[in-house]
Length: 401
Image 1 (tube, rainbow, N blue to C red):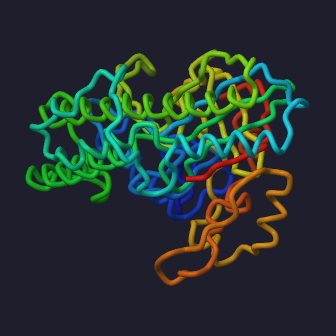
Image 2 (image 1 turned 30 degrees about the horizontal axis):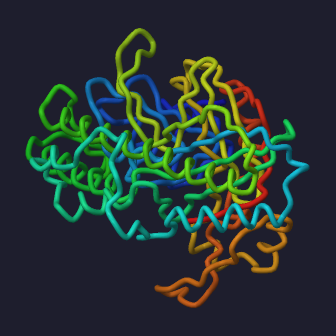
């Protein structure tokens, strides 16, 4: 951990666990450090890389304020993991293929893929009609949100079967609030930016527009962010149930521990350094003392189940994964198909899709290849003052969004 220096060799209010901060992420962190609502300092996790407005792998606390882009577009994106009682030695490649084939039937996966019909909302308590007065609401968005419950989405979202160093099979999921969270985030960022401009509020750049949390607009954003958080939690629960059901179909006598189900794109009112502040974790996970967490690698590298140490300097937070070293397009341009396939040796996965649009149309999409991500061991080792690793997991089978 170190203070980040600016060009004049003066310390900025930025605490970094990241040894290789890219220039874009550093500029975003510097802008955040000048935000009028910032409390204490900006925190950068070892998986930090440039995002939209705020670095992914960043944590800030704000005094009586909330910044939509410091929560992120996929509100409530997060992880779920379940330990089974299935011994790794009892699982064959054929078993893994059967499990993944079944779960792909039960869980629509890929960008824009939803259930064909409306899903039962039970036990999800929210009803989208209650939000008809919100500017982001439309019947189309409500219908899609209904059909998206229990779907994976695209990009870096995944379903995995993993082998734990405890000699047990683990199930793991990465997904979020789908189009609902995006709609809420997009609407409120534009609303915050318009309000800041009308009131001549100074912000470091237009991506960091904010609301005061004691005003109506801020209160409504918090209400709707929490709707997306509940939705994301329920979405992961349904995907995990489908994965467990698929596993039971192959291993009928299997049992499961209670799931870990956590967010890494959200804001919450918490007490830090003696004050109630809004902690924003964008691509970062809560790591309160003894709190269980999940830090995934890539589709070809290990992941970790961890326990938080409650480090106050990080606002009791840790990284949310390995973090990218290449953008999706950059990876598809630079990486070798042969090298990517070698990195996935021994893992059950669907082969690389072709890019359907843009300058790289027709090339294979290598944006999720292991080489596009940071070394997970370096990330874990850099934050051993934030977390204690509990179980190391190795991927056996992967479904990507």
